[in-house]
Image (cartoon, rainbow, N blue to C red; front, side, top):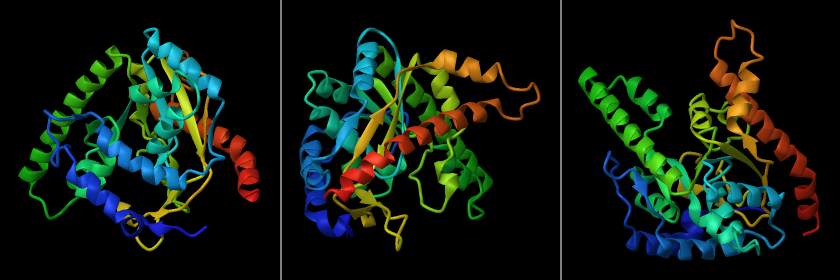
Length: 307
């Protein structure tokens, strides 16, 4: 199935979302929490209706229910999800709202994604897209590394950007803590970027994910088979050049993981001279996600073949 670039297929909808956008175009310590704009979500659902095929579903739905029960009874919940496209989060919210379970829409409303500030600052239409979902905006370490290696910037400019990074991320941490206390679930893409075929480094988990594990009680891993929004091989950096492609989407939830026990079991079995124990923990998370993805790939292939 060949896709059509987002800008070409849905330009009018992006224009509509941009006209009702309320999100900040520049992120600082005062605006790191961005609540969902329900009007933008309504417009986005038109696009989702056209691209998420009816055979799509949540697999292991009982695990999503267990996660919901945990966070509504006081546990601090973290979702770590595979990342193939900018429709990953919208698809999860969409499927939860339509899963036919009474708790589904409430769980959907409680999810707050950790998002890089690029989504807000790079393009007004991308910002409008992101605005359909509640977010805590951070200054990603990858973005700061690019600044620090930019030879066109002065030392003073780099120091100022480092200061900005610390300010934003400290505010983001406080916002995340508030979300936890409010019974919201934090969703993070552990690779920090969309997976790019042929570039295995884009599928490696970020070392910083270990810090998230330490801050939460229970963990739900969500794998994704199928992709309605594929990278355009001719333009992988422009999000609006991504190819909209109707597809079956299977999003599967793992059995709940006690984060403290998970980390301790791994760390206690590492040799004392292990160079980077935190990365080993994150690598295990990614290994489990990939194993779960592979488990549901045959089902995805069967559904696609039957279309």
